[in-house]
Image 1: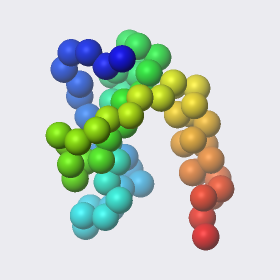
Image 2: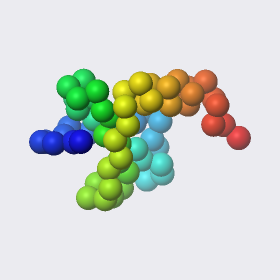
Image 3: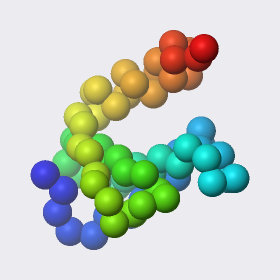
Length: 69
């Protein structure tokens, strides 16, 4: 569960041209072991929360090109 103010950071993989814009909260991750993730184009929209272990595995897969076409 995400409580209190959250500091959001845009993913370095998000484009600056209005493309795929993902934000996450490293501060929340460090204090709760849960990573909040949202679409920066709709910050008032839904937020998903994943465990830090799952988020780390996802980031590693992205970096390795596992999701490239």
